[in-house]
Image 1: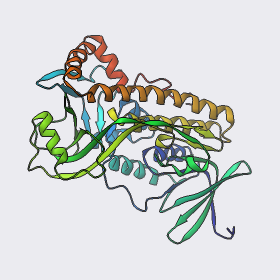
Image 2: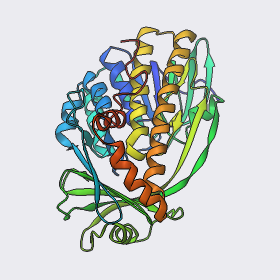
Image 3: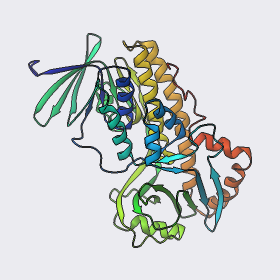
Length: 392
């Protein structure tokens, strides 16, 4: 390709304008680092997708001036009720957590990205360019050269560092030659956002039954997210599937409520090797995947974003010692969160009468006394290893 194509330069290039990429861009922009975000989607996201933001992530986002707006716009889930086949088996709360954010924030990913973008627009050093699909990456002269395809042809971008935040099907990961290892897990789910007339309020409700699980979380604007376990993967859930399974397992009738959005997913555990091959770094779902139970995946990604942004601000030439430390620390955080999410999934989604009776004995025992707060701190990600960036 001829270099006569116009070339733009920045200190840092970021591929992917999801919460992870936007958080890195905001952190760098606030520090005066010229940053270009390249996003394949031509327009902003219109669906809710991930919804749970943990206290640990809110502490990160507070550093960048957006946590208070997110907390005001979302639903602050301070309690959860766990149900068995016949009755309630436990109640848990976040009131005793050692943080200013004693709740899980329920906020659609669409709104999370809007708030991050609004903060980025106030940073003169950051630009977000949509409709750019990366087709080639090369490392040249200590920096990186990226070719993208647009509706009007090709463009070239150069930077000192490239951050791949482009999700599960990461082009950056593929082009940097990282291995993508792991395995699919055995559980599948369907989910829907449905207008809420249940009276369940701002509390999360989990229904663990011998025929499958149901999870329900409040969303802003009088809506609830319902997640139902399915016996096999349903790529396109039919009308009424979620409502039918909710009724069968919880007794809650959602007929007459409007379904605003639905989707489905299978669970898997994946990890990239390496995460860092300076001057190229991976973060978020481009680097790792785990079951989204408890919202662990996006929140580990936000931890990646803080660590990587701080590393780049400290070591602008992305030297290998810092890169190795970033990968070591974030791999450990991923492994811990993945174990936690897989354990939670297996406990809640185990089917059959024997498994259900055992679960109804073990969950109340596990949440007794001080153990409750230790468990809640783990799920709030306040007890995660290497939670704080060493480069602050």
